[in-house]
View 1: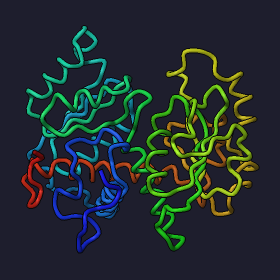
View 2: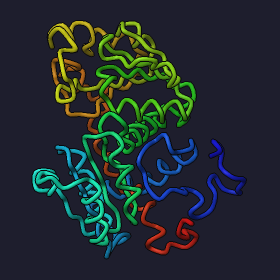
View 3: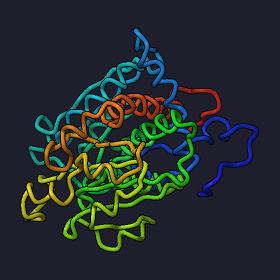
Length: 338
């Protein structure tokens, strides 16, 4: 697929050509202009969510299933709020309550969900590729809410929307040349992978930093610069994005201790001073305060965008649900995919 949109008198091609995908399973499937399209579509929902009345009937009559085979709080809540604010009927399916616990295969679960005539399914699963597998087996749009170590596309989109909102306060919304440092458990992080794909696609200068045991092999192939020295990684950057140590995904000891990790890789006030004076602090949550980030940094009103990320998450998920259901809703110009 071309990295530039077809010729058009507007910024994007008309109708369904603006986003010619049935599902949203990963950033890797999107051209840069399709990423920007979703960011632009989210702007209207940012505005709506800041109004006293936060409800529209855009998805009235539609049923959205949030099928979470892996524990989640903020992502599940964000998708639930997004669906309800758009007027949809939202059903949450938790792993502990699913028949997968009784031995049902993922394919059988997908077939069952499809038979229920859902209009969109949001999937979170511990296995990489599980969401794509379900997407290939069901008729309705499927959105990836995180699959193993693979991707978490809506997190990367909300992070980008957060950055763009902040950049606009500084007089620009261009990602080209933006210096972003992503530090933490790069090896196990689907958030890091989706952010690397998105930010490099939009022209940002991305640095990743981790202890050697938590740095993927051949990471430079993702067009990022790899560091094991955090002080060097944050030098002069515009954005510092910290990642949680994902103990639940680790099969062995990857770091000597939490105390040692904070000493070498924790974002402290002193370390933040190495970044640009205006540098934005981000974290996808939940945070290990006092490990990868100190509380006095996480709570800096003038620098931290952590709560803004949560706000942008609802808007991005509203945009994705809106865009992916337009064909089923018969929106003009959004003909079914052949």
